[in-house]
Length: 229
Image 1: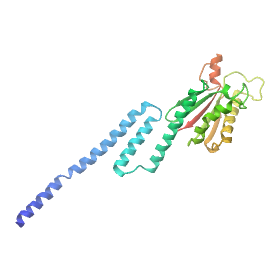
Image 2: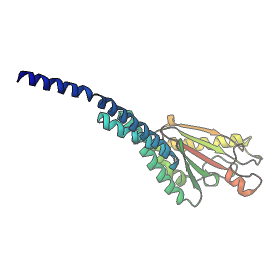
Image 3: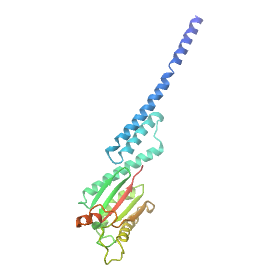
Image 4: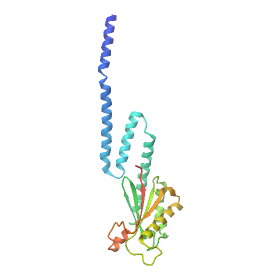
């Protein structure tokens, strides 16, 4: 009987040793799964602004939960920030749809751009906000206040010479207009540390300055809400 027990013990030991390859094989399959899951997330990035980063983070979070039981604090914070930015973008698009063409929203993975026609905000040749500018800026104010990243305000003009004006050039006018919008935001609760501005004059047109319609498109304020990467 003792001899039989010893033989059985040796057999079980050899069997366990022979099964060790399955541990390595299982690890390899896990790593391959992670690799292909990440590659799949990247391949889906063409579906829309921010989609790639969102899917990659979601994929990595899923893997992290499977292997560690939780998502890292940094990744969780980034995912929550992106969700807020997507909600803000959707709200801005709703506002733009009701603006009768006065506002336009463009978005990609890096930023959400709000374009406002200058006629909504300023009289020709001036950088003082009109009374009609208040409701236009107030409609986007909640999203500006809640943004967690930098907000960049850009002033743009057409190429018509200034003529009689306190501003010596379109450059100066565009900068003054950008500052007027920044000042409005500061007065209404936006953190000044997140605000910056610049003026480009007539040098970044989006339409032909040889037509009245083109010049009207070029006179604009652009507000970039940078997104979490």
